[in-house]
Amino acid sequence: MTATDAPPLVPAAEPGTADLRVAVLGVGLMGADHVARLHRRVSGARVAAVSDAATDRADQVAAEVPGCRVVPDPLAAVADPEIDAVVVASPGRFHEEQVLACIDRGIPVLCEKPLTLEAASSLAVVRAEDAYAARTGGRLVQVGFMRRFDPEYAQLRELIASGGIGEPLVVHCAHRNPAVPPGVTTESVVNDSVVHEVDVARFLLGEEIAAVTVLRPRSTRHAAEELSDPLLVLLETTGGRVVDVEVFVSTGLAYEVRTEVVGEDGSAMIGIPQGLVRQSAGPGGAVRGTTVPAGFRERFATAYDLELQRWVDAARRGTVDGPGAWDGYAAQAVCAAGVEALLCGRRTEVRMEQR
Ligand SMILES: NC(=O)c1ccc[n+]([C@@H]2O[C@H](COP(=O)([O-])OP(=O)(O)OC[C@H]3O[C@@H](n4cnc5c(N)ncnc54)[C@H](O)[C@@H]3O)[C@@H](O)[C@H]2O)c1
Image (cartoon, rainbow, N blue to C red; front, side, top):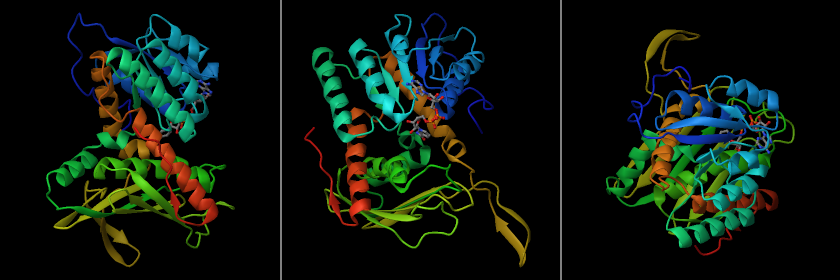
């Protein structure tokens, strides 16, 4: 199910309550999906403006939303007095200036991951938002780690918090894509794919990552030249727990994201597709199975819905109800250590400032 073919998530907001007027910066794959969700599925907000370096793309997306304007300059959209909140879905290198502009104006911003491209610039965003919070008591920045809103991840976290499997000791993660576009490098796999597992580990275990090791097993013959695929990434937490991540982006099969937490008194796993189970003819006789999602938009459709709805609800109350700037910074600091570990082939400690 995509953002456009599902029924609205919740009934429309009470008549008379003003909708949040949102500008979406960058309307490529993710931004256009966010526009469609805000328009069709989320209540309490409307897409008032879109901005994209490709103006034909912006025109095309705006044409789907009555009353939506195209504002060619993204910073002019942030400064526009008729905009109350911003979704940043431009390429990562533009996030820093666009998010800082939102903080300067004091309006809520949902920024797609990564918060910024480097840990130092992410820390600058944290500090800018902290200064705003010290003045006003409010928070403005949410980062697009949507897995936190996925019902299975939320359930797993609750189970751990309730003590249902005892003290968590080890987490096993698998992150597999059927294929990746040309130009994807081993470093970008750490920054763009492993970053989600980093956030999941911090979310589930409630502690920071202290060190990263990256192993490069024999590569699949399906991987693009120069790409080490799969990778095994080991994350050590400050509490002595270990998270192993198999990230494999050229499986040729489907999109699979699996997480198992092993505790002192039991274990729990999520990410096993459990829809319709069908039996049909296979090469060696009858086979039994279910459909595996083709991509992240299908697998995490509900998570994106809930992420946006809760962002809108919180923004209208003047708060943030999701991963914040610190989570964006922590993930960048771990990814920086991950890239260093990948390049030097050794265990690398994460360098993080105090909160
Ligand atoms: N949370 C997730 O699951 C998830 C999944 C995919 C991508 N992302 C993130 O979303 C962001 C966008 O990724 P995408 O896959 O949609 O990329 P994309 O290339 O499909 O879209 C990016 C769009 O931004 C436009 N753009 C370029 N410069 C701009 C600028 N200065 N201001 C505004 N727009 C500009 C481009 O023309 C393009 O239309 C990235 O940060 C990416 O990491 C998150």
